[in-house]
Length: 177
Image (cartoon, rainbow, N blue to C red; front, side, top):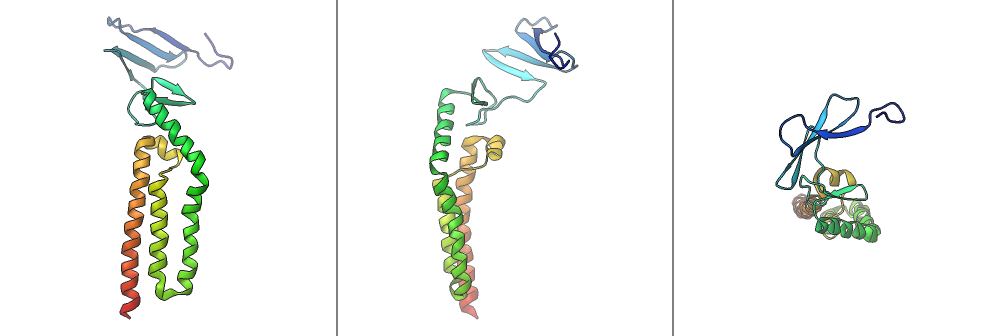
């Protein structure tokens, strides 16, 4: 069978091997076949990248929902809940990340107290990342929703620790001279 633009169509056929549980899927005009093995009710794919669950990032993908793959209905519901929280709290997240940058203005005016403003800025931004662990779609595609939320929270804790360290160092530098 040929596609509309002359490209090959997808075909499915039994493998040439003796194993009756193996089928081959490929595109008509290519040399490379994708082999699927059905073993203990699990589908193993060789010859291509496996679909991974959007939430937990396990190698699976039996449930397709809005161009995303999920291993269980629970993972799909957790991802939907994450997306609803993202839509509902985007303005709070952006406000909590960008407004603390305004604390640098009085920090430069009152340079002797810069350590206080630096601590407040990093503390607020870190707290926002812990409360709203939102990441980009590229991060989610790279590590899944679950790990990207952990990564965002870890960055939030890191920002709080950096705020403490910077404020201690700036305090020391300010009052030592």
